[in-house]
Image 1 (cartoon, one colour):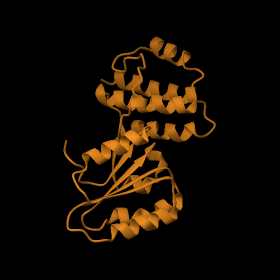
Image 2 (cartoon, rainbow, N blue to C red; image 1 turned 60 degrees about the vertical axis):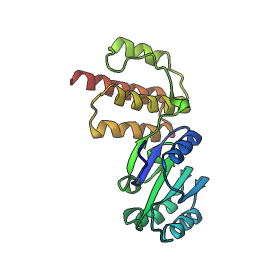
Image 3 (cartoon, rainbow, N blue to C red; image 1 turned 135 degrees about the vertical axis):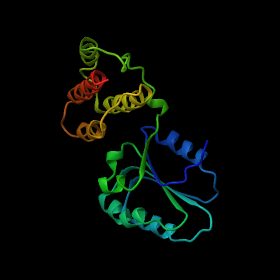
Length: 205
């Protein structure tokens, strides 16, 4: 496995597994980890101090948090845009929408499938009709927000696996779905929209 050599955002519902995988990919003893529930301004200051300690070889700064304070993110913007020499940032999040668009635009994004996300949807994404779609939704009419997140992550994995071509705007809707799930939107309505988007993509082939 090739080690990561560029700053990356890793989105995964299984934090512990994602952290283990990241550490397994890094071929370096120069690793500094910042694992917190909420990434705050004081954490950002510590990251900035660590980033400016000069190193002759690549040093990896791994940030993993359930939430990232908006002020802490803003304080990292310049550092992420112009990182010091030999500094590689790895940000682990549950969803890339946990981060500001200005942060996301500066880093490569990778979706990491986890053991929790290995769902059997019972739906062939490469070829399903409206009747199958409606039955799928009927069986999930009372899904919770957490269940929606797991399904959305699984859908993203299956989209890649089945080579379903979605536009950048359509893919972005999957991330917006994560945001909407935290508001008052019904999970089933969000899921309906995403599956209809995939169905329309099939018909464009």
